[in-house]
Length: 307
Image 1 (spheres, rainbow, N blue to C red):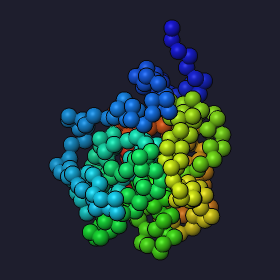
Image 2: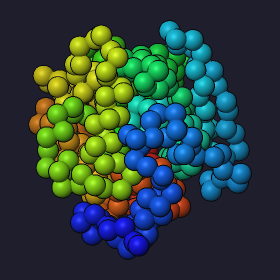
Image 3: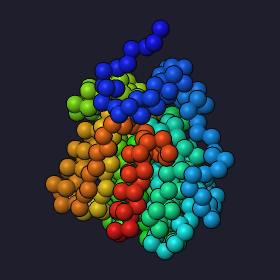
């Protein structure tokens, strides 16, 4: 007997619908029921044997941070010299790996002329807030120490960390990144905008799973859940670096991310916001799976070249 397709899936284009059905069939249970360890095992992306975007040099790094050395991977652009993008992968603060973002980072480096450094930051629930943000802050400082012009970007939870990093640097009178690239970023903890209801049963990330992931990130923390955990809580977004905000049509995070883009613009931050129709949360790193992914990667590369 075929499971009933949630109504919101009707907004997907025909190709994305097939991919969504395949993903749903492969998941033995929702992420919140699997738990962190089992979900990581099920969803881990194996390292591609032959990458879709070969690069002459991809370098494994050990980045010094207050928590010790963290794994990172530097993708050297063919015509390097523009600077380096610190990339923070998605995964709801609980999941995600360097390999899962590998193809996207390769494509950005090849198309933009910017090197990309992808950071394997610490994950919750073992390392709750603010561990991942501290890792991002320390990695950014390390890159700056090497004299690089640095941009920051990330998808989903990584978009949250990129936005929070920009706020932290501004508030501490530290030099900001050249630009911030926020791909369907998780920026609010209220789960109140219409897309949380409209796309509650969206592919890959449901509203119930998003709430569970957020709880893993914050529940063990003794710190106040402030604007560095949920950037939408910031009193002002003035004086932040120029932003590119990308969203997916069928995504519970969509309205929060677009509202954050609107606040950035209202506070005088040059901001471009692009919504990709017919796709769901997670499409950005699925290189070769969706035509919208290729378009989005071109948009990121164009944005970086402009800076």
